[in-house]
Amino acid sequence: MSSVIVLVCVAVTALLLGVVLAFVLRKPPAKSADSDLLARLYVMMEREAAAARADSSAQRAAMTEMERAFGERLERMRTELAEQLGSLSGGLGREQAEARAAQAEALRTMAEASAQQLSAIRHAVTEQLHEAVERQMHTSFQRVLEQFAAMQKAMGEVRAMTAQISDLKRLFSNVKTRGGWGEAQLRAILDDVLPPGTYESNVRLGAGSDVVEFAIRMPVKTQTPPLMPVDSKFPTEAYEKLLNAAEEGDVVGEKAARKSLENTVRMEARKIATKYIQPPATVEFAVLYLPTDGLYTEVARIPGLIDDVGRQYRVMVMGPALMPAMLRTIHLGYVTLALEERTESIARLLGATRQEMLKMDGVLDKLARNAQAMSFSIEEARRRTRVVTRKLKELDNPVASEDEGEESEIEFSGHMKGGTATG
Image: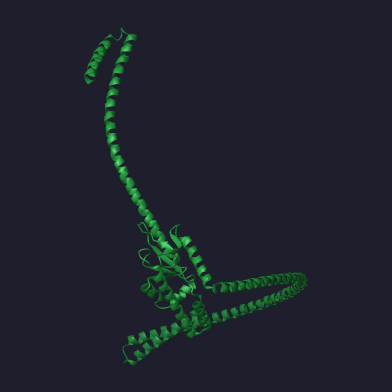
């Protein structure tokens, strides 16, 4: 790299000198001094060029020698590397052969051990599978027997339930029996919610009126509280027709059954209003009780029926879900009435207590005056007792207490005088 740089510098210098010579030669001839100067410059340039050429030749020879030495060294290194690679490949081949043989032996040993283990596992799995299959078959057979027994039991229960449903249908086919069942259910609700003695059953509200099933006493402050009539009705025929038509998808039959149910409810409400609403013996409304929530739901689904019955006949239609809520309201009225009575008795008791406290204040005033006079008397008695005690001490030591005796006598006489004057 350095020889190349030197050659480049020499070439540039020669070029510059050539340019200078050309410029000088183009000028007209000058004096002899300029000619000598040019000659000297030319000689110097020749010398520099010769030196540069010699230096370049030496550097080129040195570079050739270095290239030859580097090539020989590279050849030796290539030869050594080839020998090392040959020895290494031979060693690797031998090691790979030995490793291959050892691996084959290990694989053969592992294959034999695996075959033995697989045989043992296959035998164990076969035995466990056989036992599990037998156990599962036994369990499944036992479960099938249990399910068969349960199915037989369920079939017996279904038969019994079918018989009970038939009996229930026969029971509800009788109008009197249906009414008795609704009355019993209503009585159970009344007993659960209302306190004892707040309702009567089978009450005749007037001289010529019919007997109502239940009459609830309203919580008011009167000698004879008004009664609220409650009558239970169970229009099964219209309800069953409605359910059957709905199940069969008979729209016309369902509409006719719903209309029949509406007419039945209106008729029963009119009867209750005519027979049982007798003010002032009763309140101005009554309750029509339907024993099932399904029946009440169907009645409530008829547009405007409950509102019309309440507005026209003053009859409230109730089901098993709404009846306890209304009864709890009546019960709350009884609780409120009892609280009012209790409040009045407490007010009377507080008035009597106030009068007694005023009397007690007078007694305490007299007792305070007497106590004040008594305290004065007690203090006077204590002073006289102290004087007597000092006199008794003087009797024990008369010489040492002459002066004190005189003062005590004077004090005693003074106290006596004061006591006499006080008395």
